[in-house]
Length: 181
Image 1 (cartoon, helix red, strand yellow):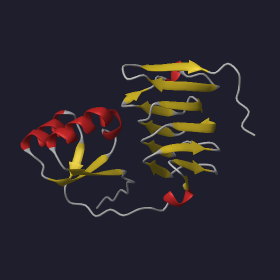
Image 2 (tube, one colour; image 1 turned 90 degrees about the vertical axis):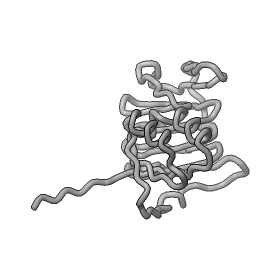
Image 3 (cartoon, one colour; image 1 turned 120 degrees about the vertical axis):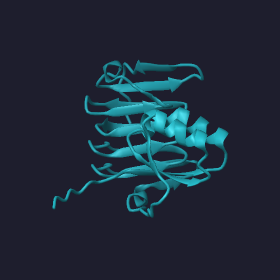
Image 4 (cartoon, one colour; image 1 turned 45 degrees about the vertical axis):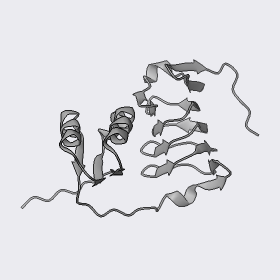
């Protein structure tokens, strides 16, 4: 007998309407293809065909519960703040804007529905659906902004302002390093 252990990352999606499901999947497909998708709700033949056609792994039978890293997040109005290093293996999900006052280590993942500012270097993965990001990255970083992976060659080893103007993503380095304190 052979036994292997895997760490699996799962997204749980509740399907309220087929139209909303397709809109969400189209926007986030680049990110979701790398995860197991746990689906709740009615899975129509069109949804199943879409998932199979796009190579998305999914299931309808799973029991998941994990909030162990969410305690890092402090709430400040609609802005959430993390005031420590986001370590490898940590996964943070934030529905609003996020300010990270330290670095994001390799193997750490941030999922942000709002805008994002990280004052330390990003070596991990960031999935952001806001209007803008301000980040300093390394070659190890993976950045997905509004469903599009940002080519690391476009990001300099200094602060980069990344904005979405409704039609295109614009990346511009900030020439003068911000002073945070």
